[in-house]
Image (cartoon, rainbow, N blue to C red; front, side):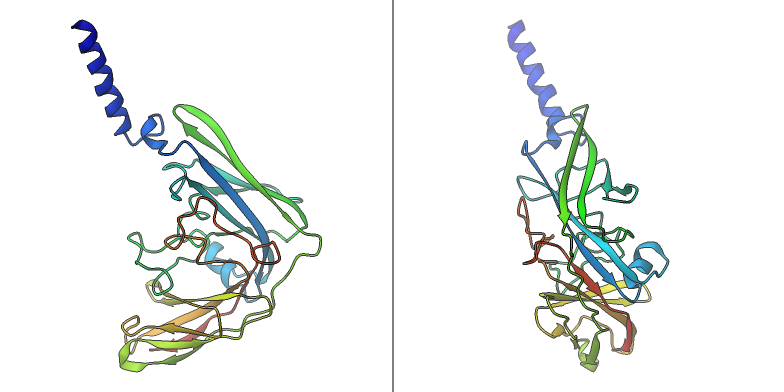
Length: 281
């Protein structure tokens, strides 16, 4: 009987540990496997749009673009508390990037969050992560990597991934600011974009005084905002991001893959960003 009571007590303790939300319990290791990934390419920030959003300072230029994913068997973020990650470059100091989740950093860390209609259902935390990390570093050919130390069951575990930027990296052409045709009182409308060569999809990010309010996507030259998206009579701004890889499809909520595709046909993850355009709904 004493052994039975001892066994039952052990089961209660184990059950409590599984229900715990810390990384010193087995409850956080849902699958036993994690899948760190990385892709590298270039970011043509010709108007300084992304640098301004990410850092507060507009610095037009071309930068190394880094895209990461860090997932478990279920396609969700590998860890509830992913530690602190660092990017390592061929010829620049390492860059602290905070915790890396299922698709890059936390939503908005790069200055952009995914919103409906391109990202549905709407996020409960104000927007989805968009995967790319603004590095501020010139696109030097060579090996790039990220590393993180995560505390798992009381032990520090190293994780990371690498990717290579080729000797003649692709730099996407300049994408012009989107042109909007309002649907007026419907609250919807249509953006027209000029797509540079090699761009396979374009995301139009719409902002109002309170922040980013909508994201439209197109694989052609027109991106649609459905009725009810915007408020008639309100002023907005918009800019376009052109990508040569599955920018939206690789991230949440579209993808629950353990290892999403982070590169395009060139084997890299390249972006081009337009300047902003103002309009009234």
